[in-house]
Image (cartoon, rainbow, N blue to C red):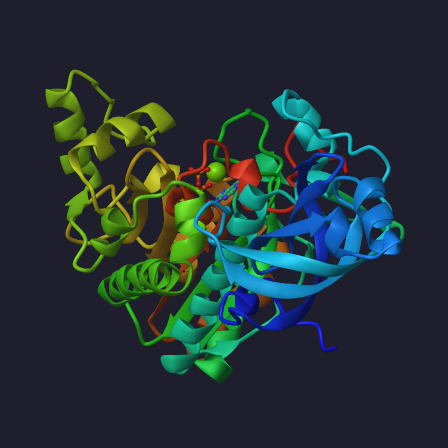
Length: 429
Ligand code: ATP
Ligand code: MG
């Protein structure tokens, strides 16, 4: 018999089916055993009755342990009491891989679960999150491809910094030093002169020294860069992309959202336009709330979270002070001291999900800001060539995939948004 997936067995009431998977739960007596079997699609209850099966199957049912893999044949019937509404009356059960006593039990600590991540990934919760994560990537691809962007693979090993030296990971590269990429940005900016509209889904590495629930040392950044576009254009892309991702997850992964206890209706309301304010206006809102921030200081987590108490859609904050932003962001001629940039902050305290800007084409301005940041200008000559040979207006942004997944899934910690989290404290398994 051909094996079918558990979710397809739900449509085979009264029919004989063959499924395979792992034992998720087991209970019963010396006459009958209830096995909950899981595969990648769902779980289903299977009933083995001693007087209905041959000896071999009954012995297997007695012997089988949690997380053993197995193959089952039997008949599907509706059963309101079963966890997913259906039950298989088992005819045959064959153990494929008998599991040793499973180390993950009910009352283990969160740290133990991170030590056992390779096994904990089998949990229903993490499985649901990983499916949503996969849907987020699929939505990103669909969004950009339908807007005629080319996908580009940026280098992971880079000779220079782009987001400041403090968070660089150094790598021994033969007898030289290199760094793990913090962003594809500089490479993107030189590639738009041929491909014009490009995007990537790439790992990014940052040695984040402070321990927060929204920073990973290795994370996935989905970045875009477009020739002939400015700040307004990329704000529009950001709004449309984020709502496209959210609506796609709602449409295709509502089952997983429910497993996570997430409110689907709340997510349905995430549609453009998103509210838009300037950094200076953000400070005014914070001041009224009793949180005074000195003009020129970057917004910290507590300030972002306080600000977001006023909004239930993602918020676009433009025109941050020049001195807290990267060297490639151009000064805004209409708002001295600020740059043509925006951050998008997620609701409910999930922090910044997008950081983007228009890019400066003024070589002198770029050099001045590189110097300000303590960089060696000569190492950036290749990048400056993009301004020397047919420069065009351009802009782009990076979206933190795990931040978006955390927000959509309502996670307590960003570590659960990636299969194997890396932080200052955690690099195993
Ligand atoms: P933050 O202020 O939160 O550290 P950032 O200003 O350093 O963010 P950008 O350099 O603009 O972030 O990076 C683009 C996006 O990448 C951010 O909007 C965020 O969603 C994501 N991001 C940045 N750093 C991390 C990290 N350490 N872990 C996970 N996601 C991150
Ligand atoms: Mg940062």
